[in-house]
Length: 313
Image 1 (cartoon, one colour):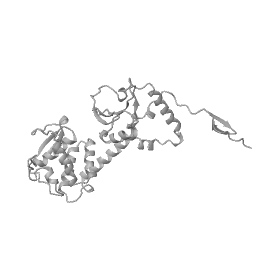
Image 2 (tube, one colour):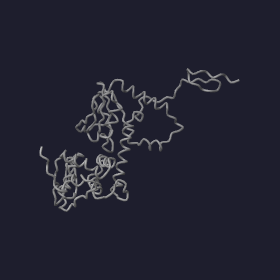
Image 3 (tube, one colour):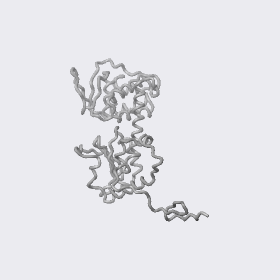
Image 4 (tube, one colour):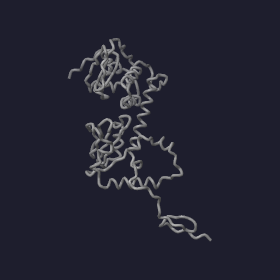
């Protein structure tokens, strides 16, 4: 195979293939870019920006792109080869952790995520030192902040997801996170629940993760209009699922210590928006009753079945 010819310092790869080589000046007329909404598509846009030397007026997903009065956005098809070259080349200007933050910023779905990622990459290309800790720069601070928010959302989803068992032995959970965390929690649930089939469905983004005992895949869903999150499995639940829910609620009620109730601290560690996923936070079908199997012995109470206390002398 004949080696392909590379334009001199025109592409993003050529600007970052040598460590700390200065980025080309973006001297051409600015353009409006649109892409397919994937991270690979955004990397393709970054490649095109440095190849054409045209800075972005805007970078928008095609599905939500808005045309300006005097400009039509230029749509770029995703090019996996170019995206890979950009992704690998970024390690010439930043470490792996800083590069991962850019992916997390993309998943955050922040309104300015595309331009923020471009400005961060451009700053890294033009800096002689690592920019990941340059907190005097507003873009660096914003990237760090979004990455932290993404980490917290990922951690909470791993903690608060509750599965329900269906009649065909599938464990499913419905979530509606503020950020697109499914790609980040896939490894956790694949490792933790490797012995059962499960599906985690993101109701807001209409796609999910499905594990079939051998691999985890992304599955797409049509928009279930007019449905609530709990309606998806209401007619296909395992007949024992209501019992499991009741047992879990009973356990939660009995280990609770009302005298130590601190709702302010409780909401800090378990924000209200996550309660809809939790069995223990759902309305009780059976009213909670305190344990009644206690006996009074010599002025003291002990649970039935325990060794009786000796009478007081």
